[in-house]
Length: 111
Length: 235
Image 1 (spheres, helix red, strand yellow):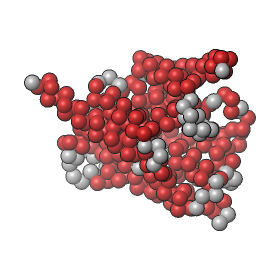
Image 2: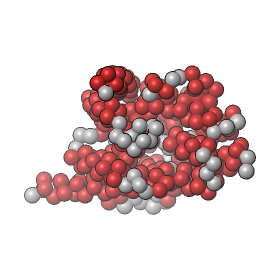
Image 3: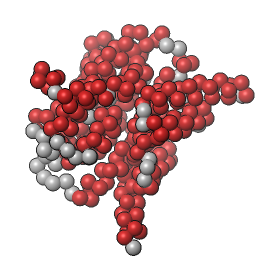
């Protein structure tokens, strides 16, 4: 199958499946009450899901050598502290990127 | 359409999303570069970002496509990575219930990590559901429109940025900016710790299943800790 045709198939099928995922419970709970236990569990969705999403991106370098990437982990920790105190997306990104560049430079000189 | 664009809450939601949009620039560029590297036509690259509208799924799709994976494998992997939207959908459901069905369908299309994290606090604070819905639509639309711009910029010009700048690191930084401010109670910290450890421990699972499994474990841990704390304080 040629690449463009295959990509359009991916776009159509994944697009439909992703939309179904996004609509799923919004449509289901449109007609009935949300159970109390679930409503309570939903409070922890951002913390749990976003952490699960971010940890692999930080812990391993994009080359996927399987080794922990020390500058990235330290820079992410610094960014986390900045985000916690400032609640600002731009400051978090600025602090994280500058920390990563400095750490890569410093550790590159040592190593 | 013009009436929606003139709505004060829609405009406020749009404006509040601007910092997150700037943070998403590297993510969009990375996705566009990936689409170009996989040999996608400009129109297909735009279709991918406009219809699938999920950076994680887009990157997986173009990487697998470039590696020559079968269609079924690409589709399954992207679907599993998108299962977190089911959980977001459930968490949004109580707040969007009062809105008309047509709105719910529009909101669902714009449901992303950023839009969810940015709006869940405002939605859970209560208030007028129409205003909160308009606010979400404004932010979601800003993200969608900007996402197309950055993806196209990456497709046509992304290669001018050298890899040594590590711009891809801005992608996790966007998520850290969203999640770190939540870490103010013990059950929330517990949920994040369990999810973070589990996603590494389970990284051998195929098709990025570790993401949804670890996320679910974290949610369960947070809920259990919440009940334990309640018991503790009642005594």
